[in-house]
Image 1 (cartoon, helix red, strand yellow):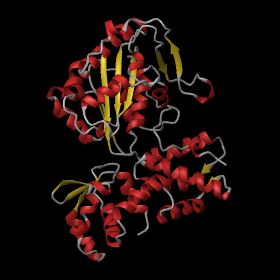
Image 2 (cartoon, rainbow, N blue to C red):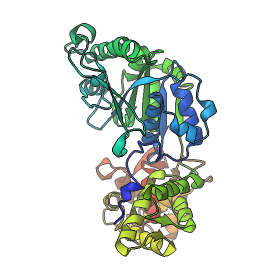
Image 3 (tube, rainbow, N blue to C red):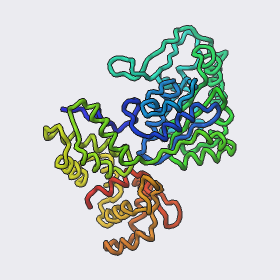
Image 4 (cartoon, rainbow, N blue to C red):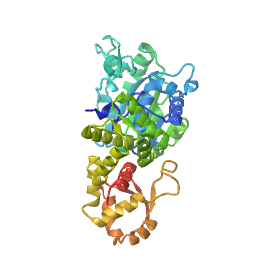
Length: 428
């Protein structure tokens, strides 16, 4: 039995040796973290690999430029690259405001990525991690023990009751003075905030980031494009911080998607291979989204295990496609699909028409994904789909997804472009 996670994963790509492609994005990452002043802003559609890029930024910030060298970008690396202590926090929907986020950051005890581990504290053992390949047993962390001697936190990182903003400021300042400058001799502190888009009320966060950003403190946020606009609107002058730090992650070209599968073959160490035609088919069907390539790959491994084969050829891949079309594969996407259509054959047809609606340019060149409802209505008449206006509301209702986002009158967009691709693959 082959473990699919050995070559494919539907999670964030943390290890640099798993990361494939993204030449221009890697170049932008190098520039962003080596700029003394500025906000790193990683944005793009769901499923394009934003979080994986943010993790690679963390590697570079810690001084690991192995991925850059592997990508042929060694000349882009400064003679003396800036190095940081790093904090990495993934936001969730329970965080409703900036105040909630700061509460989480100030109380996060994650031993690898948390802010609290860096705060000077008498008798506290503080650690920093450098992601390297030197660690045995396949781990990606090398622990550098700072020892147990510290500085009294009440003096240098005072907690102010009922004022989480000032407490956060005190913690950041204490880390810069006693850890960044004195102990670890780094250039700065880098605070990376993933899934930033889930925070509903970001009021004040832009101003706080602007006021704290300096040559010693840098922030990085990751989310969809609309959320970065919200951040800019919170404090107009923050736009200047984005000049050299904005990284727009777009869907990948088919050649790069095929390389993900080739890299997976290498990780399987000969236990599983893919024919060139199957690689091309997966790359084409994934429409630029590496997340879908990973899902296709894992499903291929499942079929290979079931049929006791070690090569994924067209015959095996046809079995995978059959499972997808019937709804047996990709259970999470299938659950979204069933919830959206609600048992209505007409809504099922309409959803397929919406998903099949094409822009003039290929998706990986023009990723807007906007749907002109007027054009869809014409096709709906051809497929004998009555009452489009009665079928559509469920698709934009939060209780059933939502599946679509209404940009303006008559113009819609799939909130999850990966789901859009899934709908096109699914049998109607």
